[in-house]
Length: 68
Image (cartoon, rainbow, N blue to C red; front, side):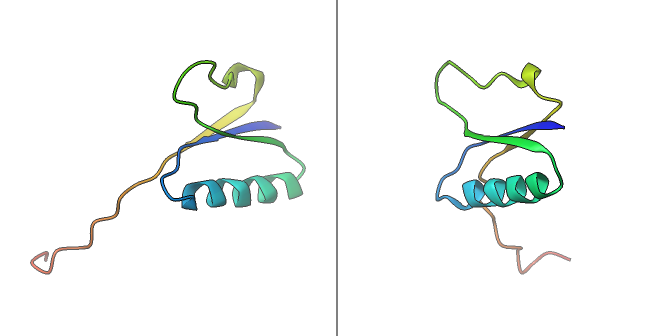
């Protein structure tokens, strides 16, 4: 299976996760392309792949001490 992984990252953690995922999928015999999401065209073309994974940074908020 051909897999496209596109990511955006703030500090590099998402990039590292995507490359780790690509290594795992590659070890299982899949053909994987990993690309950082560009801010402007040209964008990666997902039609050339059987599956696409999109990943992005998230800012984690710590749980409130008032939550129940």
